[in-house]
Image 1 (cartoon, rainbow, N blue to C red):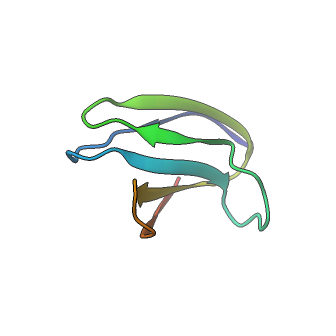
Image 2: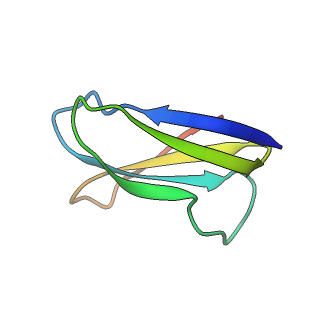
Image 3: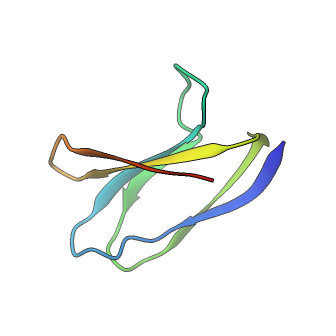
Length: 70
């Protein structure tokens, strides 16, 4: 099982919502979620799964960006 810290950075001028979920695990609650402020990196500790997926949304819109699997 992988464990460590995932650091997210929002290099846009708008806040972005995000969630970190176990990759390949359907119907699971996010391990971390919230809003990333512009130009302020944030780190989140994870453990217990082999892979993690990060998803981003532009705050105030319905558009989802499926991020990388790490």
